[in-house]
Length: 338
Image 1 (cartoon, rainbow, N blue to C red):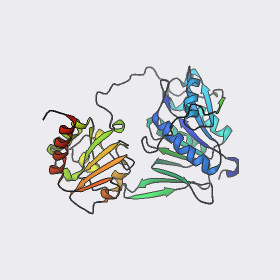
Image 2: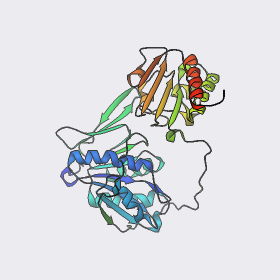
Image 3: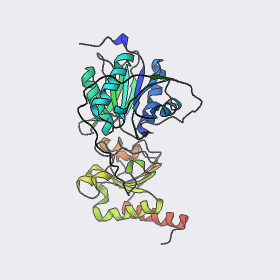
């Protein structure tokens, strides 16, 4: 049955945290949620679940744009489990009835989002790259790539509430925190539930390489690079600039770069300060993963390549000549030995 839409008001963000540290995607969603809440003229709230000193994080949530923080502090929420976090979130959503609920498209957010949407009998649009309010209504316009990234689809949940979306990290922009912002913290009790799984231990795997999604400079290659051996040219430029190497789906499928270095809809979403797109045509599948980069430098022999439409600087030329030239220039300017 359709939801009684008039019973639902407000925009709510699930505040993902682990080990008393809020995930960056939560701050990004608060920034986007603030825009949506202002358009709808409703409060922006956050759902914060955890254990021990979780209340200390509520101030950061308010500083990043929230008006209200719904908080549950309970030992059963120390580590993420679907059953515990579902029970806590479900109680808050059913009690306060937000019309929009946003989660990060992370391992935790995807798991919890699907479980919540099922129990709430509402729709869930995954991996959104754009959110807006339909003019003349309170419907959330949820834009995401579809059909393998060949088109951008806008989806709306018109008959059910809350309207739920997951958004990948690095897609939205967080607000500059304002420590002087005032908000309300509402503490709730953990409801009774069936614990279907229990965390025995938590082991953190330390990565030696900088994560692609956190890099400030990315030198990325596509089909136009021509082969795995030519990625050495891109790596040399990345090393000089203190960046990392990425690749398109075609480069990853060909085995030229590892899947963990793939940028795009089926790879990582990135927002570096500088993104070098070398031999990348610019299919929608790739653009959704990097188009929010601060500066995009595109190098391609095809002057009609779609990548040039989003590029800050466009270079029509052979990347095998242009990239080494960049490397020599930067080495000279940075005083790096040849």
